Length: 407
Image (cartoon, rainbow, N blue to C red; front, top):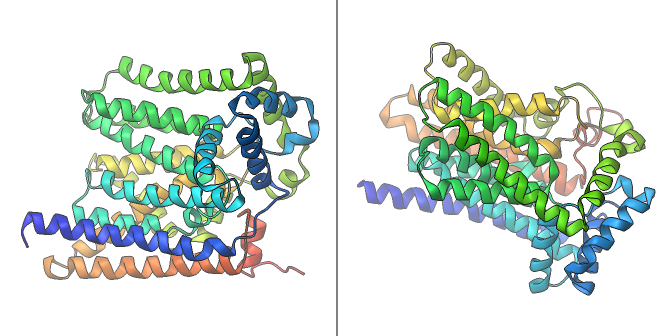
């Protein structure tokens, strides 16, 4: 097959993965029961108020959140990036739980498509297409793509920011890559404040690649690349809140709310490896392979034989788990780590398939990926469709897997 023919075949293979992810969400969205009394209901009410009174209602939303202690257990209105996105979406499709869920589904489909477009800069086209299938059929990402929450939009923009940063490391002189990184990072920060933690593994990646001599990105350039999104997102947040004082007040309430939450104390504590356990409960074989990939990268790094993409994936996983170790334990908050885990899982399978020789390499890898995708889709339907899990805490996952007694 010619190079053009291979590129077209890879694109069709990736497109089929995107369409499967879209079809799974389209078929299951009508069966979602909205959590009207939980975070989903809060986001809907925020959007309804903005739809009725316009963006000028944002300062009032912040003032109400700061003055009513009962609201501290719910999402703050500081996530203005999501509110802007949701308001624009609902202006087109109506303001409802269904519309907000469809927004999340669209973000997952977009994240799946952009995975192929950006992964093929680092992998052969057909390999990038197989990775697209693995990411598009992630049970956790599919589950978040069905809910009227910030998670799926945040995953879209944080994953784009991560990929964009890899492009900046490879091509430090590329202005489009830098602008893409700044824009996607600023958007991810304005959608979900925990996105700020992504900046730490990015800085570690910079140091790693510089030490390996694989990037000539200057320290000064890195500094403004990380600072500008913070300034932009912070400025938008201050204007939306009606002043810096109100932002500080809301932030203080949000930071202190976990200590006062009975739900957090009962279901969101535990050791650092609880996130790993939850990921294993959701997607056992892929997570195991991904963790094996982390160990393989560490072993190769000793001899400086690791590749940039696998090093970036391992760094995101290790640093990400370390950052979230002292925080609330909910696998939704570390859902971005499922992307590097799947990239490394694919890498492990690729190495095994490469040992079979040229004739059997592609069929064996495709078959192995098909098994992983099938297992993941079964897991998604069992846990989140038939099981109806809204919040994938360890308790809910263990109960759905029948690993603990539940009345």
